Length: 171
Image 1 (cartoon, rainbow, N blue to C red):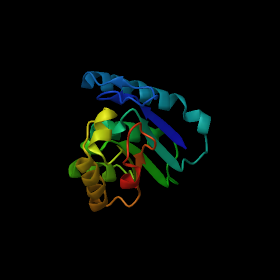
Image 2 (image 1 turned 90 degrees about the vertical axis):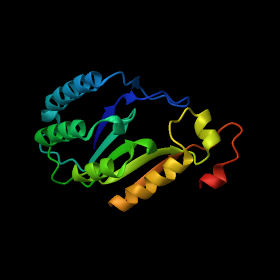
Image 3 (image 1 turned 45 degrees about the vertical axis):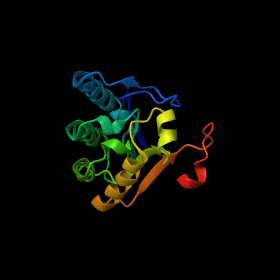
């Protein structure tokens, strides 16, 4: 398994303990992609003759990357590791970023699993969590992912939010 951490977010959610930094401009992402590809190349010999079965892009918010940036990273990974047995290629994504065009581009890159950060289907919960999407956008993101051809879709939900009564509704 190879895990690629994309440390960028539009804003920090109140519950998040993962390392992330705000996206200031595309130059920051471009520099990171360059450093990431150098790191990937430097680790090539550590996995000699190993076939990678799982790629996972987590974060932060990997879906903040343009498709062209994701292609640079996936090309770099395939140049340095044996991906011929790749079975699962996952990207974490936020609902508000999942347009039909973007999802189609993810499919063309070979991504076959989405992990969507829904967190809640209750707008009051989402506001408290400092999320950028609405409950309606979350539902639409899942529907659009399925319509584009993603059959392996997971969603993150948060249980036990203070004052929330939406757990059964979320399920």
